Image (cartoon, rainbow, N blue to C red; front, side, top):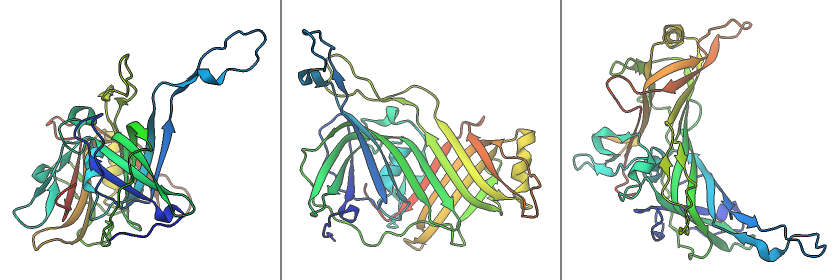
Length: 351
């Protein structure tokens, strides 16, 4: 279904497509993922020559105001949906994962049985996967005319997912674009009308914690926020290069989990890990509607070896129910399990 544009954000869109090679020819975007905001900041990297001494001239000359290259950064945010989520999720984990059908069921899992394993886009850029993508943002003027902004070779540098029991599951992805331009023609986008946001409302949706492989449902978790930040050098400009070179990883990936909790009988075991310096595997599992008799739409995340770094105190503060926010850091355990793994089961067969 193609929608009629209007002269406001209501008429805007975002479209994405996997880019098989960082800096490769712009790939016409075909997927329009549901989103709520997409704000890009352009950097034209302009330098001013001088100041030149010229017989009392008191202002810089405009001809020496020159551009040396241009790129962009931005943040796209929305709700995790039953469709259109795979490409950006793979990019957020820096993964080369692809959609694989589950036993001819009509359900597809990103990364297959292994799920989406945390990696770095610096490793998987250029393998034809979704670790790198091209994006077009359609932005309307007040007369309803939609103008294209084309962001080449985007990678996601930081991602956040929020699992809120009283709301829907949300995402926020910060991205870096090698090059931004306004010349590539506007696509004719089409939009699906039936995406369903993931929630934690179904009986199968739950939060689990425990030693790896022994996780059990925990009562008392109101909201879980999982954040991953890739540390990348995204500013590699060399003599003889027109645009930035492929980003490289230059520090350890940062994984954090924030749990808003009540001090329930089950949650107490999480608080107690603080003084004991014991790690826990933490899992958020959101299960949606049925795809086939064997599979439901599913979005889950697991931090396999998390240590509680603050919030382990159950302090008395007036007559209210005892509560605290538990802040965790993800590590790699002795068995070398993936520090962060995502599961996405969807009816989508392609990015």
